[in-house]
Image 1 (tube, rainbow, N blue to C red):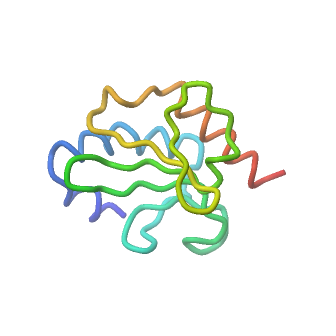
Image 2 (image 1 turned 120 degrees about the vertical axis):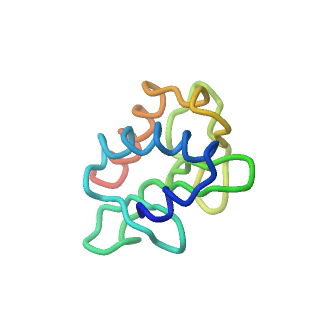
Length: 114
């Protein structure tokens, strides 16, 4: 996972450098490279019970949650994706609201551990 993150262009790396510690605070030791990008899972192998992911694109980084459509998001920032996923596009560290993102991660973790 570190090789993926360190290979990113500076703008995306600034975003992931801000966001990765936040994800790790809720899902410590759960991150690994899976399907070519960082994924935080609860199972014994990467991708078993996935919870969150990061994926770099040319001008932004996507932060997504596997069951994001089930998460309460009064901000309206999480956009529905495939299946039950939801994600937000991040272009700069200022796009990251630590309290909001931690609340999303807490909810995502609770969905998988009930």
